[in-house]
Length: 225
Image 1 (cartoon, rainbow, N blue to C red):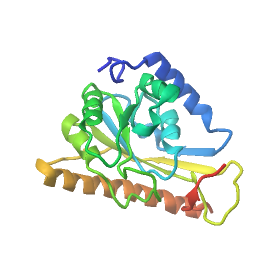
Image 2 (tube, rainbow, N blue to C red):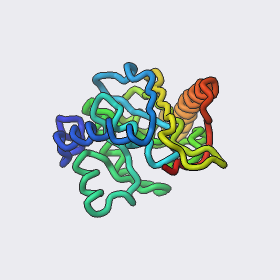
Image 3 (tube, rainbow, N blue to C red):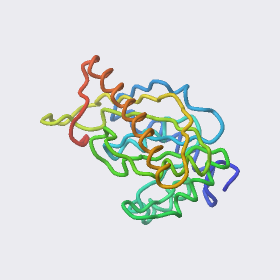
């Protein structure tokens, strides 16, 4: 692994430039409210787990995090110039719905080196309520000893029955980092995955309740700008 907290072959300079762009990329399209950013550990291995309901959550989280981050990204994105760019900024391709240890080993090495890795435990986009989770996140914690940092995102999906939105409000809530004990074998992974899912789902519910009190919709269709 690169000493910059990125996989081998990645460019720290290009990564930092992409983070700078990501910080401002969605400001014209969304009104972002971010709470709890001070909870992101400044150093040490951190596994970010976030809910996933649209294509823009990874980019928003990537831009808002105050340190370098490595995301597991669906393999279909790694074609042509986009694929070259994603690899150069340190992102890792993963095949969805298939056993694929290579990306887990790569990101485990990033974590062992004190880096930050971000995953979406649901495995694919949906309502973002975290009703299910895959075992990969728990495996990474067991392999690296990383703390888990939950992040909830709401507002990227258009409310059902509504028209095109102008600069909708998107809320991001960073939870408290917590250690996750992962026992041996598949049973240990299953138990830890259940706890991780419960923690992230609870954070999403907290954000939904807060948004409802603010008069914001909490669910809807995929965002269409």
